[in-house]
Amino acid sequence: MLDRLIPGFAPKLIPTLISVPGVIFLLGLSGWQLSRHVERTAENELRAERMALPPADIDAVLADPAQDRFRRVKATGVWSHAHEIHVYGRSQRGNEGFYILTPLLRDGKPAVIVNRGWVDKQHQNASTRPQGQVAGPVTVEGVLRDEPRRGPLMPDNVPERNQWFWFDLPAMTKAAGLSSALPVYVEQELEPRNPGGWPLGGQTIAQLPRPHLQYAFTWFALAIALAAVYVISQRRKA
Image (cartoon, rainbow, N blue to C red):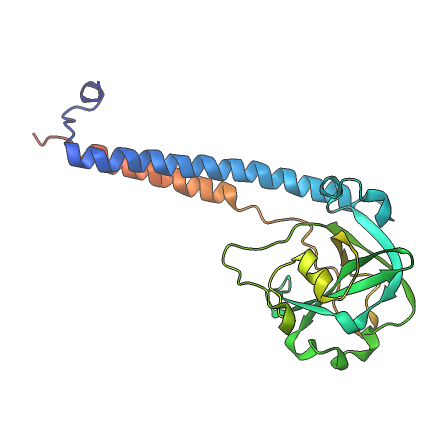
């Protein structure tokens, strides 16, 4: 059939076995990127919708935390600064540093682990930011999270050294010496800022980047290019 549409087209076995699966594979990658674009768009819409809601009491949204992720919440308690947890991470501008997670102790209720924000390496030690070690009752507002956020190449946490690379809530609860803690954590908002400016709150990524349409077009263009090279190379010369 193709020899009628393309004069002189007489494909050989080996080039066909290489090119045809290659074109199918590249088209599959293009379709996968399109589906990722749809998923990422839906995720961004969910985040925008929930983060636009007024903050709710954290105990009121615990029936199904997965359904309330990225909902703004508030909780009242006292910081347990002696049990800070330092999670290696990058700020939204790509600078290396640490997220400071601090238990918020609540009277008669399970503690809440709060990601108070990011600090650079010079402010990892709590003694370098004494103003941020607030004493007494506080009310914290932030975004509800429950996912561990562990990437495929992240190393294991080392709790005994306070070296953390991803959010392992059960291990963090144990390392902080807590008898009980909620199965979620809160990412503190930027405003009001912590005294002294550290930790720097507001580290939640409200909108994820969406480069997938560009990737989809790239894979599709490569598929077309490979198909064109295959067809041209398999035409008989006059």
